Image 1 (tube, rainbow, N blue to C red):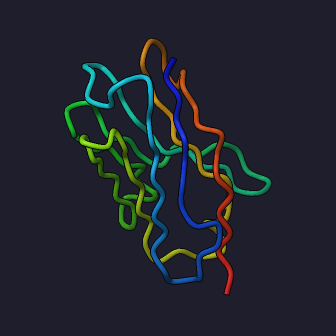
Image 2: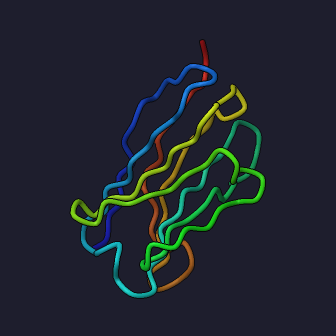
Length: 118
């Protein structure tokens, strides 16, 4: 069974770079057809897709976040990583790593709370 687990700091200061890692078990991130995404939910808002990295390594980003978002992967560790630069308090929220395997967004991590505050 595929499982995803987010890790990273729970508190980040404004203007710093947030870095989160998703460790995947039970299935390779390079399996053909797999897309690995980051989705977040800020207080009082709905889910926001931030970007994804395909099984091929190609990355895709939300146009509104593209300028300060980067997604990469470490295939040797079966992990993919989100970096969000120049964070502001508006970046506070719960961040989820998600994968498409058999259906869109069919595997989710439990989520990690990130607070941006000085």
